[in-house]
Image 1 (cartoon, one colour):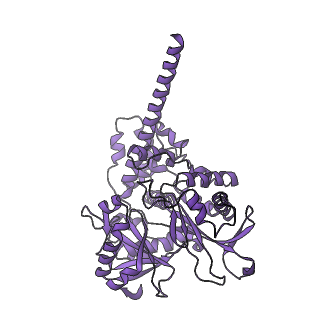
Image 2 (spheres, helix red, strand yellow):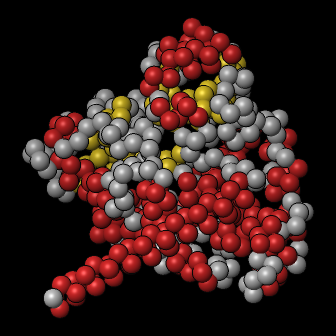
Image 3 (cartoon, helix red, strand yellow):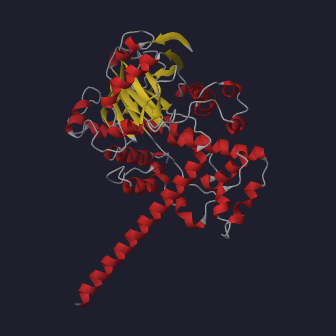
Length: 457
């Protein structure tokens, strides 16, 4: 924990950058060397009276069983410190410490948090404001590097462009515990099916063209197709920053109108980064991102961590009830179903095995929900050689060389109690998608019958 304490007067130097379900992200605009090039993550609390989005206490009893091998996590007094240590000791070794920044905790006063809440409210999506606010009862915040910019280094200062991608789950499950009625999960991506539910709930206005299997395909063509689709329908899965400022993408996933620059405006924003004729910069930028994802192989390790989920939620939920020593509610629902015996074997395994299944599932859930930030800085002729530690990528269409850096962010620890939510959400997603397919099939059948009838008349 850093000794510095942020007070009310310091709040003006922190501006809204974005937010997720559990945290607000603020960027630093002041001049203090300790915070230049940093962003702040502040925990939120729900307006319905709950203390925090993910809770604020130490690990609960059954969570202590899950993480008993990590003494620091076990000894942590509150959720904020646990989150940081989880990133440091669990996710960083799995994804590679070069690509993960666990950050540092800094003390803050209540007045600082209250001022931040007042300053950022007008910049937040309205639906977020209605549901949550800054948790002013915390005594510290997390400070991490601003991955949307390059720190001052040996190269002369130049433009920096950053893409933030939320890849989502990159494989189709093959678990034998997936019920036959849910077999669609083996052939249709979770992302695609979830789009149907989001469309039904009016959280999005159109289907995303993005298919995570393309991004994780390991092929240049597949990755390029994925980046093009993300650009076409970004939703909350694709954002672009220029010198730390958002220029493309949304602040929240329930609106499609929050895209900052589109078409010619985005082309113009790229002119100091991508040396191409007007009308060709966006396609060159997409090529740059795709080539970097391909050559870096950064998603290979992420996919391996996602694949720690070998049981699917339909299997892992049974191990969860073993861990919390409660009668399995899922088996209770299936008691009169011939499938119930299929899961009986999961309730006779040793506790250690159940703990591993649930622990691996929650780690995989973090990997499925995290984001990837790739920052680029063009190298000029006079910059070679620089002695920089950053890797480079060549963009053939413009004959440019770019330095780049890659980081995973939003590596939040998923609370054990979320297992039940994951199971219920999975049911909703599959049911909604199946109903949509059925409705579309019936509509197509009706159209064909009408066409056949008109031919007979």
